[in-house]
Length: 289
Image (tube, rainbow, N blue to C red; front, top):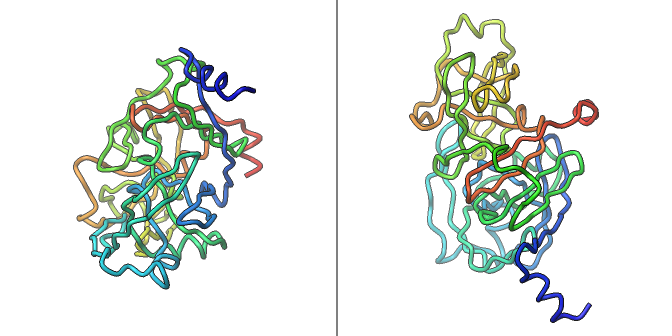
């Protein structure tokens, strides 16, 4: 096709540019390919991540030594605080977009590598796709990136807000109103409230590791979750604790909806417009996983 004709077609009113990219599901985590400073790498799409977070294993030695561009940053995980460092990425590309001189954090991501048995060079959050619709299809294992979307009714989308960088939905858990963050980098659903020991005495214990490799024990209990005034209403397991870390608790967010919830749905999300659509997956795909 003539290049000039192609350009004119793309500029026509209603013309929609879109690209589809493969993803890999590994133990619930969404892995995608990227190119960071000239190298093809795997990263985790983590809706709870503050932008680009690099693995210190690959970005603190040799030519990538911090030097003058390093400074320490105090970060918070679900189990408490940990130290990250700043790093300026000269150039990287992901989902068809080239980014230059991106300010990133560097942290210890060794837990993800050990758990997934793969090299993981980074986590990436929603801020890097803030101006597009991203259709995350777990069944087809693809991400479709579009500037506009015309085949989905506007009224089907749920609205969300941000607490810092985390998208947050207003929900009900066992009938009580809760603000819950969507975090694809968390295996389980969590609540930060303090719970009476009698409620969790017989509940299974779960070791929870956060992005700073801090660990804590939670208890798994089933609760009724309602999203968007009951449009979604099902029992889900939540991880709760007897003595929560007060520095992570916030009046703006009561907990997290992680893979325990998100794996039930294919998603269409526009981070900039702060709207999301949950499309239930087929039972056959859920059983296969």
